[in-house]
Length: 594
Image (cartoon, rainbow, N blue to C red; front, side, top):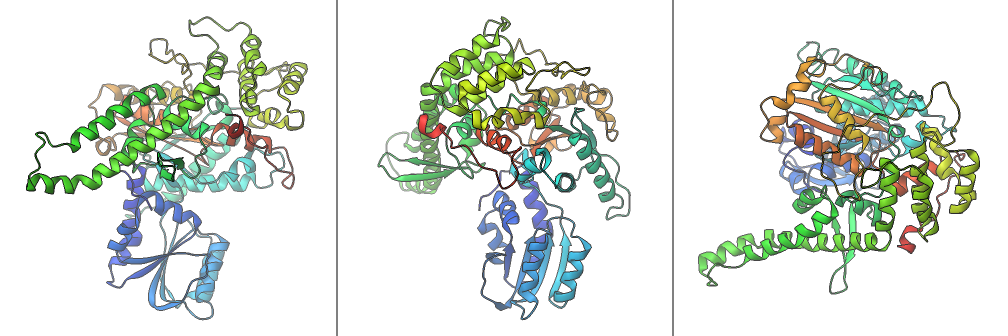
C-alpha cells in the first residue's frame, strides 16, 4: 500500500477513515483484522500504507472473497461496498459458525434497507458497529478522483444498454460521497448538449445532495458552500483524448504499456525492474506535467544535484559526518532509484517520439487547432491528413488522425468517410469512427436546423507554447471561465443556484484577493469540482493543477467514471454498437510497430 501526499484528496480520505474506522478501533486495545473488498482495497491502497494500519491496531488485512481461516478470538473490521455480493460474503462469515469474535461493519455509502435487514436477520448478535462513511470514490491524485467504473461508459453510451439509469444513479451517489467527504454542498451546473446525460446526472446529484444534507449531525440544514460542481460529457471535447500529448505523464501513459500505474523496464545489468508512478515519487510529482523537452533537461540536473549532495565538501569523513551520511542513505537511495526510473521512462518516451510520434504531431496540432505554427488557417484539412495516411503508421495512429480531421470539419460526407475507412483498412472495424455519434459528436455532416456548434475558445495567442503542443484542452477554458464567472448561462444552465462567490464579482475578484500560500490555506477559499461523464484524459487532469496554481484562491478538482488513454477510449468506443456477447478488441498494433 502507498502513502498519500501531504495534502489533497488522499490526505482528506485517509483523515476521514482515521476519524471513523480507526477511531473505533482505538476504543479497544485489542488487535483487529481488517477485511476489504476489491474497491475498498483500492481506496486504502491509494491513501495509506500497512505500517499506518498496524500503528492503529490492525494486524492483518484480508480479502473478503478469499477463503480465510477462522480466528474466533479476534474482532474483524469490514470496510466494504453495500452490494448484494459483499453483504452475502459477510453473512457467510457469521451465518452458521462465526469466524470472528465480533464484526465492525463500515459501508462506503448508503446500504439499501433490504441488504441491511438481511444482515440483521443472520448476524445481529455478532455486529457491534454498522456505519456508512460516505467514501465511494477513488482519490487517484491530490486533485483527481474517479468512480472506478469504466463499465459506466458502455452503460451510458451504448445503444444496447439496459442499465443507463442505474449507471447514472450510481455515479450520482459516488459524486455525493465526494462532496460529503470534502464537506461541500456545491451549486450544480451542466453543459447543455443534444444528449441529456449531463442534465440527468446534474438533477440526480442535486437531488441526492439535498437528501444528504437535509439534516446534519447538529440538526441544522446545511446550505450551499463556496463550491461549484460542473458536469460535462466526453463528447464535449473529443479531440483532447485522441491527440498525441507531449507532457510527461500523458505521453508516458499513451506510448508506454503502463498497467495499474506500474512501469516495467530493464536496468543496465539486464534485470527486470518495475516502479509505481504515483505521488510517493517526489520526482514524478515535479515532472509529470512538464513538456518532455523540459523533462529531458531537468532529470540530468537533478541527478547531478543528488550526486553533489552525497559528497563531503572537503573530502574528509569524520565520525559525525559518517553518522549523518548513514542517516541520509535511505533517502539518497530512494532519490537515485527515482532518477533511474525517470531516465529510463524519458528515454522510452523519446524513442517513440523520434520513431513515429514527431511525424504525427504537426498534422494533429494543425487539425485540432485549425491553424499552423505561423497562425495561418488550415484551408484544406485533407492536405494536412494525407501525409499521415500515406506513411506506414499504426492503424490506431491513422484512426486518431482521421478522427481529428472529421472533428475539424464537424463531420464529413458519407462518401468521403467510406474512402477514409478504406484507406485506413478498417472496413470491418469502422465502429472506431462511426460510434462517436453515440457521444453526440457529428461524424457524417448533414443539414440541420440546429447545427453542431463548437465552443468558443479563450484567446491564448500571447501564451508561450511548443510548436507541437499548441492545443489546449477545452476543459481548461471551462475551469478558467467558471472561476472568472464567464460561463454563458444558456450553454451552462444552473441545476441549483451557486453561492455568491460564483454568481457575481466574488469569482472574478478572487484573482485579486489574498493569495493562499499553500494547499491547506487554499481550502478556506472556493472549490471548483469538474466531473466528465465518459472518462478523463491525463492532459485534462493536468489542467486542474494548472488552473489551481494560476488562481491560488480556488482549488480545482477533476473527476470521472475512469481515466482514459487514446487507445483505451478508442477500444471502448469501437464496442459500443456491438451486442454484449459480440464485444471484442482490435489487436493493438502500437506495440509491434513502434
